[in-house]
Image 1: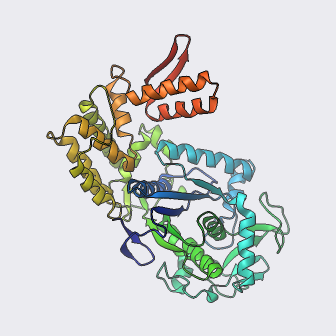
Image 2: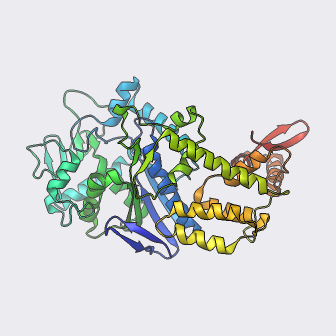
Length: 469
């Protein structure tokens, strides 16, 4: 039984998917005008762990994440520059170029953190037609109106506007930092489609029934989530900063179009603080994964650090805390390395069921990861558990934790450690694929071997497999 804290009800609820055995999940991804910072990645790790927990419970997960590459203005209101256009000017490149570059950088950093790729990575610029269609529908239903700078959503027509934020409209105005627009019917109304400025041409703009322009930020998530997951789906996740404005507006759009609640569970991750205060580019503390690597930290140390607090509680980042997390993570790897036996075999039939049940109970209780980590430490220290069972149970836990525990321990053990039978079998399978000139399959197997912590080289003497140093 999985329990999740639902932001909509402000309560922990038993999770029941709409379709038995299947979960449809959407998460807000990056705005790709700059590098994602570690505060962003705290949220993305939370989303990844939630997905892993669902899979751990034998649920099939269809996971969609958006890439915002247009329409996100500098403020939460509907004035100011588009972040993509602003980033392009600062970099001296086109908006399309920086979108491509920072999307690739985001994916590289995600992979370093063992964040699984979504089933669908939906870019806003690939779904302009879907967004226009949704705005047209809102217009037909009487929820949209036109003013001089765009098409706006009329929040007075939305029955439960602001319910998820549990704020009155005055509170929502303050939270949104919206500049007053005398043409808007209500101060909480928001842009669905913005018109391009008449005195200059934007890099990203499209024709629409209302004129040349670009979509509002909120409409992209409504259009893309429902396109891939249907008009009702199970989970929507994101950072708590998105709750008062972006997610409030998503709900308003969805329910206006479909006439009913469209998302059953809203899961929000809390802020990452820096030295007890807020993180911000202007403060010079919006650290990236590259900043951590320059200080000598393995990216997975940050993933481990994130697990030191509940995802719903603010977590304070300091370099001292990272050093502590690094020592703790390395200590785990060393202890696992010490109990590795030759040959290494990972077999799900050899598990310490009592420990697995404890671990599962905790992760299923609203992702209680600090407590789940304590179970990992318990089994590592438990001398009554045979090493083979201990290693297989740790590998089982790591399906959720994503800390590469066994792979790192094997690497630490050194070159003298035997190559696992599974890797040898994959190597032979790859050789067969190569002999059949099936280069696609050969490349796929090579990637699997690398992901398991081994490198493979084709030499005149044959294929050689060794640990990645």
